[in-house]
Length: 95
Image 1 (cartoon, helix red, strand yellow):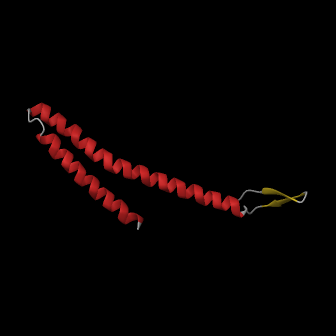
Image 2 (cartoon, helix red, strand yellow):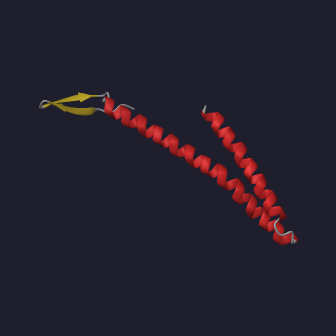
Image 3 (cartoon, one colour):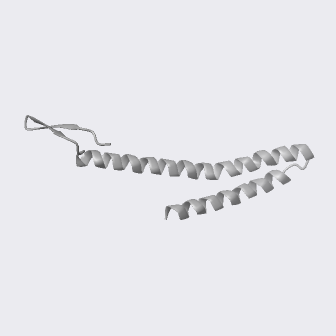
């Protein structure tokens, strides 16, 4: 959607429907920033959630069956593997 833009040049106001180069660049920079932030948050969740989930579920199983660190460590290791696979997929999507 194009907006009408009023420009002031040498005391004369002109009406233009095309944004100037500065606003195009700001829009492009804003889109780039949003993409970088989305990628960073996706990367953060891809690392943290599988590991925290593995620890949480492992602790529940260990307390239920009395197998102290066995399930916690096993599911934490599984969470690390899942996080590594997710990171590799994210890297491949970007290239």
